[in-house]
Image 1: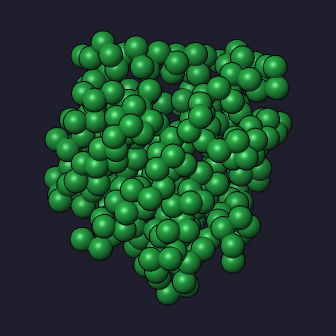
Image 2 (image 1 turned 180 degrees about the vertical axis):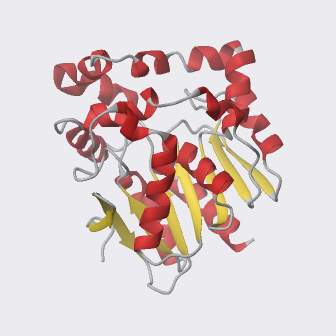
Length: 280
């Protein structure tokens, strides 16, 4: 199966579009995408992981898969997002797995590792550090506060953010990717998010956040954190504090000159970091 095609995976009443590639007997790695992306963001990384012998599973997550797009903010709590990952793993017969996530996918990956360490062999978190480290920076670091100002808009109810992002054929949404994401991918991301209800569902991840994320416990599985030093959303204070919340073997991989869109912009070093973590 090529990475470009999707397999429907049913989890309860929802059906997720999942990209699966690599040898069937390879050690499984689940890849979780961020906002505003899809599982296509992992295409280049997935090719490298499958070439290294891994079975790669990359879902379009809740709200991004057309048949896993329930209505209402309450349908996008982090507990449900975590349950989706485990449900997909169960449906595919995966007892344990390596896990990597980028941006919001990193948030979910941290929580899966915290809440279900018996399922996660290793964790590679990309761009977004441990949530306690991020929230400490958000409280105390003016630079991080400035970088996170956009979240307030995304959390507003009533469709204001949707209107702004999709106006003028998605001009502001397209601008978020800068020059780091190939135009072909941007076109596909925007088209998927422009589907009825899709952008609202994606933004509901922000709207469903609670203050409890700030007190997320430490992780007890081997972890690598990958961060680009040109990331516009995550500053150095949060990134460098990440390791304080990992009670296991930990590696911090800093990518010089790389921004927020690490899977698309730096697939080689990212794939190397994931493979090295999985083999450690």
